[in-house]
Image (cartoon, rainbow over all chains, first blue to last red; front, side):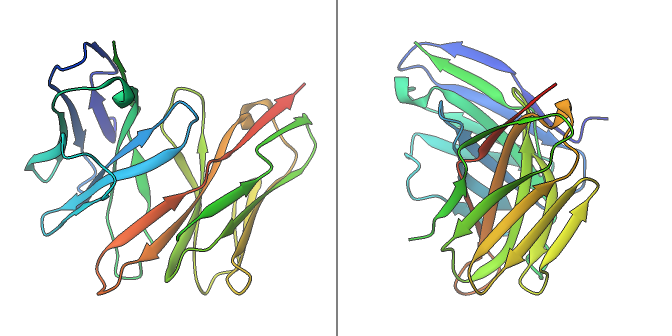
Length: 115
Length: 116
């Protein structure tokens, strides 16, 4: 009964390849997110998405694209992988309230290594 | 520029002792401030959430404070346990202009090690 799940947990691939990371939440939340955590453990939001709006962090290269087949899933597709893409990627979900206060639940992370 | 600064960067304490972690921010307009605990190899887990009108929130041995005027927050851990060893991350969410969208800014975290 995992709340937010990601697959795969580990991904090792070569430069130039295209890969996807899958995320699913069973909490009924309306908003999902992708974060990147670099080697210095700094978390940075990449995207937030609900059925109305996609918010993109402008620093994210357009090689990264979120794809949401339905409300419970937000997959991350990465084209032409580069060495600098190596990091841990976290998916998260929340139910955003008008007050702006909301619990955000994170997945276990996917460690991507580009060689 | 929106920034969240945390101090200290790392902290080592003995089991049973108390400690306080600091968070200063420049995020505006302010929506809420959250503290997360991240164990090694795991995703962050929410400890507390505070909106503008709240100046303290507790979750067990964790107590967070917020001073929205000075844009400072602290996380106090009482009677530390070995399992408290983790990274503690302060996150300040901005209410985006035009409403309806919330942008979080993360601090770099404080790494806490609790020794027996």
